[in-house]
Image 1: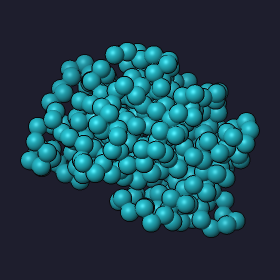
Image 2 (image 1 turned 90 degrees about the vertical axis):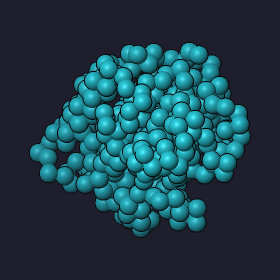
Image 3 (image 1 turned 30 degrees about the horizontal axis):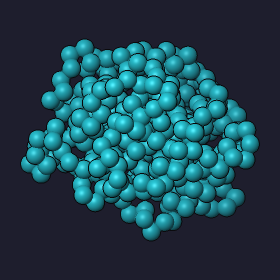
Image 4 (image 1 turned 45 degrees about the vertical axis):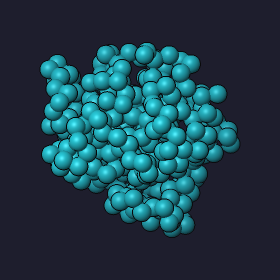
Length: 339
């Protein structure tokens, strides 16, 4: 298999994200020995017959719908995106299906976003760099027709509605960038280098139009110092990915190399590591991500988003995709952007 432009990357990425989520959801709070005892050899892990997803896929779809609505209304900009995103996130917060162990940061921020008249910057949780923002950002990397500035701004704004920490912003931007590069056919072997160059180029770039005065609510002297904190943590984690790939250890828990994934930069790194260990074996990559000691559903959903963006819909077994929860919603959104 190789990445090609006509591979239906958006559909492949969204399906991969949901499949990884469903595979990792039952193992999220288990250590590796417990997972092996429950599931058998990790290379043979099977998707649950009832392939339920977590809040990761639910919020990805919420973001995708909000982004689609904003783009349908005209040129994508911060004000045009903020309103439908806010509405979608609040709808998710109030939904009876929001019962999949959602993160505290998302719940807290969405409860504040629900209050009319409250600016989104007041709802943003600046102390949180949990992975809840970058595990849902793949649609920003998949939507066609956006400039680099629009894509970066949208990735950071969607993060900032809930997770305002600069590392959450940078990791979301970097995750969307990785998805975009893979969808366009970038070779996996060169991906970390491309992401490092992107991080360095954007290290002190604060997107004023998209983020407003968010930075003033932290303790940094300038907006440049605020964002640089986040990019520096992402640059450090990219080094750890490269270290892990120099001496690959596919049989070892990936969290030992790049972190457990509860925080944004570690979720990006460990999800990306699992993909890069098996770039031509997407199902094996998902299984490795799901059989990990950390936030296995978020790690595996990111692995699936990367693998699906690179390989397209052919990456995934039909017997899996036929029974994934929210299948129709995933296919509808993917088809819109693949067309």
